[in-house]
Length: 253
Image (tube, rainbow, N blue to C red; front, top):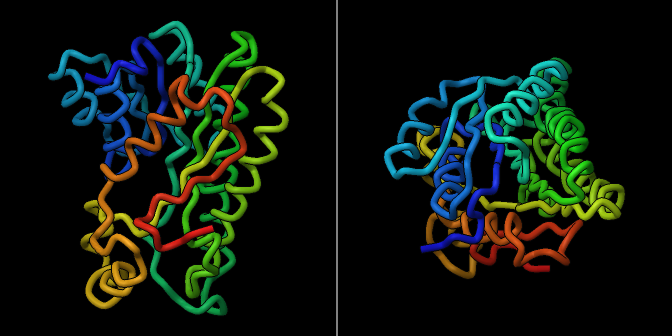
């Protein structure tokens, strides 16, 4: 039984479905107390965790709202006493359609940037005072392999994840003196339930992604858990500012 995160308190944004739900359940299995945060209903995820005797609660939060994320952090501290781990997983991807960049509207561009970039920034900003006061903490941002590949027809998404990689490095520099580690995971195309039913990511697109990997199979949310728990645990005490690609070897650098 993995107990590396015993009694740690973790907030996972976008935790109600897909990769986020897998993150919540994986952190709980490693001993963490988990806050499932999402605009969607996270009670089913928190309920499944509760059935395993681990502690979890659902707190509705909008990462694009400063007040909402500040309330998320204060409610977490009220319930569990502190915040040890923030997983910035909330983001727009599964609901986007691929298209030439000329066809992306300014409104859609701004929406993706607001959720994927500003949301990550605002959550880190809200949780930092708690971690700085305690002189420890972990922030894990979710980037994407697309930021390194220059994937076409998703310019707003790719640009937003490139920003997350750069943000991770700068945050690591600023928060390092407070013993706070900031790292990122860059998944490949991961077959969450929302991606599985997306017409742009099934059939030929999925097959092409698999063919590009050294380990030629579909990627599933569970493939990301060991890297996440490593970043959240004391095993990575001297690792910060890094982005690890978890994609079966599609990207090697």
